[in-house]
Length: 272
Image (tube, rainbow, N blue to C red):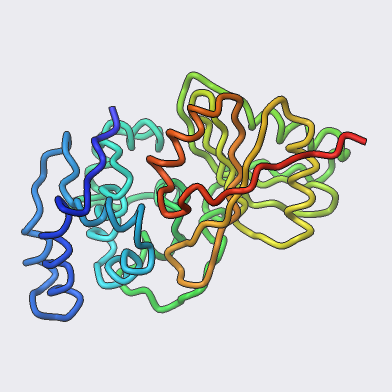
């Protein structure tokens, strides 16, 4: 079960400690030691609150942390338990432990790349202690050999393959996908969660958006879309959510994306 979300009041103490760390008034280890380790509760309330409400300040925190602590802050910000993270990564318990706690164990690039896609950050942000490159990139896809790029298929088959990925499922999944639609290569974060499908278009421009919309039009769902800020300041994703039930959609938006304040666009397709 996903942990209960925190309020700003609960996070306020930790935000004050975070500001001391960002201003070099306490060390990183002192800041980390302020937090608990109970996996049933959000041990870093400020990370969860900032990720949902103040991406710019959350970005400053992440850039100040080393890679291990940054991954832990990202994990805490989502409210996933370690078991849920292990399920999404499809890995053993020891891999998740090494991902978010100091351990003398090498983590494969594939797991790190998938972790970065799940948490909507560039690969270097989960792999490197120092963040020196402040632009969004797609290098996380370079490390995922099981991605299928349909270069030789007809347009009809490419569309069909993408539609297969956009299904309501009982099993929660988050996975990367690359699709070639009308000579446009789309880099996608695909999340199947019950009666919702969440698509992040990571390499946004107008041609790629139109290509994706041409596929969404052929699905069985209603769709909304909105711009969402990334941890790389100035870079935005375009997020598309497929749904049939307005109540399920509104609950998901308020819990996961309160920063957009319900300012999303309902897509109306021209069927002519």
